[in-house]
Amino acid sequence: VPGDLGALRIPVLFVSAERDRVAAPAAAERLRRRIPGARHVLVAGGNHYLPWEEPELAARILLACLEGRDPGGIGRPEIVHYSMEDRG
Image 1 (tube, one colour):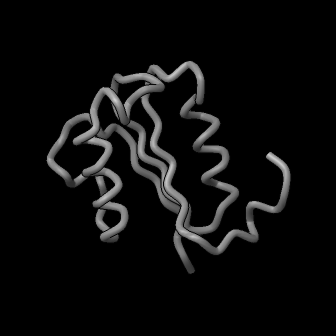
Image 2 (cartoon, rainbow, N blue to C red; image 1 turned 60 degrees about the horizontal axis):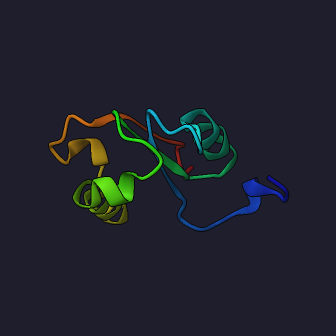
């Protein structure tokens, strides 16, 4: 990924699925670590088409993050990992 990701000052959310073979969750986590305040949600199961296969879950994750809540608290066991760097 070109550019200085550390200079980004916008909200960034990565949502990964455990079985995604197109966009590996480990790659999303590496990128998250380079962007201040970025968040990463890893969902159990699922694959690259998570938003199409589980649109309600994807929407609930996005809404929780937009509202500043931990998406792990949305009451779904599918959230297996949530990480966020301290903002300051």
